[in-house]
Length: 85
Image 1 (cartoon, rainbow, N blue to C red):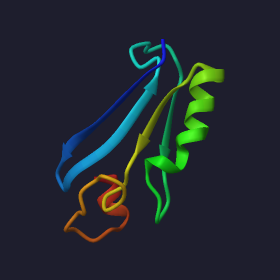
Image 2: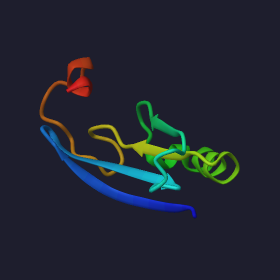
Image 3: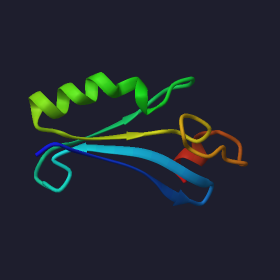
């Protein structure tokens, strides 16, 4: 069964928005993580995620980076250390 879970997770630097879709409760289904570039959001991968879920049986996790989409703007510098943290 295909499902989508859209929510926020509280992090050190604010709220991060994500979408998990596909057979989200089937831990044996392969998981693909999608993180967009500058000027985009989780919407950028909407059609690709739908194809992977419907034809490939994947679970797809789409994440809004800090300051993009519905995620909070982090007060820390937006550098590699922020995203690793």
